[in-house]
Image 1 (spheres, helix red, strand yellow):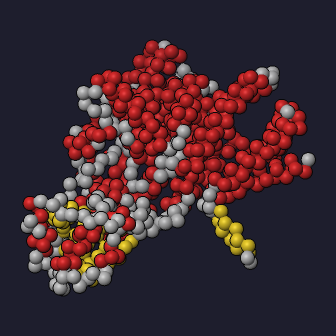
Image 2: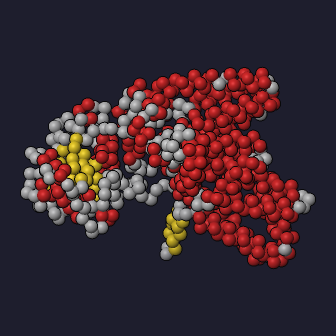
Image 3: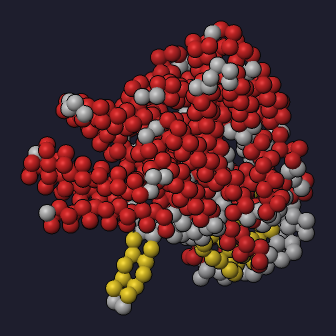
Length: 634
């Protein structure tokens, strides 16, 4: 008895430990020579699972199935006792977990991580354009729903251009996704299944990543979860309220497509579901009126197309850039099917975030097919089918973040199979039917195993970063600010093609200014874009020397690594021949900045140049020369 009681205490303590670590993001304290610290939830969860396995082994050794049943009854009795003392706890569990997650997301928002390239490019469009100009063709190969852009610009007009202000809207949509998951779970699922759904929709590897990037992908996920759930809600109305709820759904769909591409993509399937269910349950008149209400959505999407969406749909730049992630033209039906099937494994890793693609797929499909709430299974099962159809028809790239909107629906499928298995186990246990109990137990174990895999891969996304001064190894903010503090009137600026968004953003240069857009600074300085040129005729004229002839100083930034290994050594070696690298600094692992004085004798800055080397360069020299041209937005 003492052994079993001890293991029970260890199991409960491990679960509490995991909860504390998840809530606080980790802790550390010292008492004399005793140091206690924990930053990962995985270890206490594994400890809890190990304790549970030991308890099961003890119970089995003592009384076999009877012992296991008694052990399970003991835990259920303790849960009932807690539930009796706090009757609100179980029904409110999804909302409580969602609230904790919301606190963690807002806490993570306070970490001032520098912007990443994709964030800088969309942020430049928002900062340097008026509200009315956000609907046209965006600069730098960017696109986003018009309403999302307008709301983002309103936020930075009110709160400024800090990283926190820019990421506020993505975080709010991330929190809204968790809130929708809590509502869905509270309404249609058992409390345990609802909690799992809430946790997955917040800690999935990429669902936990994108709330902290200045992109619209969290809005995509939020609306793609909300609209199918709202469609099910609309079909559950009484006959008197069915059309009212249908109108609410159409208005929500019309609103959502201004903020999320995911809302546009899931709407047709959800609308079809809504009309068919109303036709089956209410007759053709109600179904026809439900379909007629769709004019609200059609009108809204038509206006959005005219204002903004057409520039994305008909963009040659975007089409060419993402063509490699679309079905190759002329593939035919079988070729397209093979191509799509080949994309499933990469998509399992990103954006789904699982290392168990086959088990995950079988569990999700089973959830859609055998769901206790058949309408949930049908409508959410249509979401991934919509994505596959859109990818096959070349409407969207089947690539990572572009299909993030599908992920919450897939998590719903996983939770549905867990929910169904729990119900089957309860029903079979009353008879008892040990065959069904065993099958249900295995299904529950598999669903939990997959859920833990998803959780472990993404939970760190909610924790404040330990390296908040860098983003993927880059620190464009500090590097560019370091250069701006040293810049004198007439100094030139230099970086690579994809390094310019960082300089424009953190250097506070508006690319809406015609002079800046031509690569010229107001004080006469020149903005140079450099690249590697292979040995050949183009190197004969020594383009970098020719461009800098007669210039006084050039400030160099290397950020996003859109250059081959060895290019940094080639660039700074060439500049050190033309003048002297008088100051240099590295920021994080991958950002570099230097001041080159072209008035000093060549070669006098060799002692500083080694600070600018990259680990990836190795010892190999890059042959060729440095190409240069005026930097211009694209």
